[in-house]
Length: 331
Image: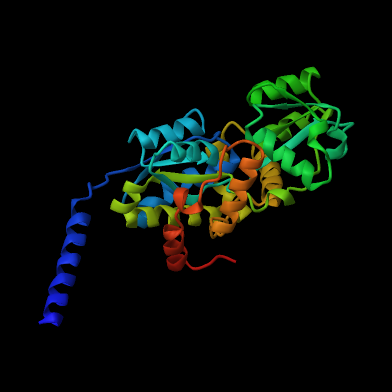
C-alpha cells in the first residue's frame, strides 16, 4: 500500500509539473532589450538572437538597442522584453529593490572591454597621478575599472584628479580640448581618437579585470522557470555566435554589413585589439560563484554597490551548464 501511495504521489507531482509547463504562455518571438552601444563587440549578441536562436529553438529573436543598461533592465521588469543585455550594476540595483530577475548567461563583453586613451606624453598608468582624468561618474565603470587597472600596476588612483565629463562624446570632447589627459573608451572610439596622432591607446594590462563580470543576459526568473528550454536555447545561440566570432575570417564575412559605414579595415584593427582583451567567453566559464563574489566585492569596494549581494540572489548557472553539455566545451 505504501509503495502504491508513493507511486500515485509521484504520478501526481509529474502531472502537476506537466500542467504548469503546459500553461506557460507560448512565445512567438524572444524580444531583447540591448542596453549596449552598437559596436563591434556586441555583434555576437545580436547575431545570437537574429541568426542562431531560431535554429536552436524554432523561435525567432529580435534585438533592439535601447538607451543604456538601466533601460534594458526596466524593459524586462515591464515585460517589454524577455531578455535584457546590460552591465551588472543596474540589474543588481533592481535585485536589491526586490525585483526577481537574474543573470542566466554572459553577454559579449562579459569581461571589461574599455581601454584607456591618453595624450601621447602619458606612457604608463602611473603617469596619470596628478592628472585630470575624465569619467561618466564616480560610481561608473569608466571610473572603477580604471581604478582597478591602476592598482593592478602599482599606481595610486587617489592621486588622480577625477573629472565628471559625461558619456563617450563628452569624454572625447574633453580629451581633444585638453581639459583631461585620459579617459576610458570602447575600442572602436579609442582607435578613432588615436588617429589624430596626439592621443594613443595606452598599453595597459587588464590582468586585474580578468575575473570581473561586466555584462550579461538578464531575465525575470518567472520567464526562466516557465521557458527553461528557450533559456537554454538562448545560451546555446550566444555560445555559437561567440565561438563563430572568435574566428576572424568568419567574423569579417558578416561584420562589415552589420557595422556600416565603418570600413573593413577599421573593423579588422578593432577586432585585433578586442581579441587580446578576451571579452568573448566561448563557454561562459566566467559565470561562476567565485568570479561573481569577486565582482561584487570590487563593486562594494568602489562604492558602486552599498552592500554585497549573494551570487544565487542575482545569477543562475543552470542554463549555461545545460547549453555547454549539449554543445560541448570549446577549446
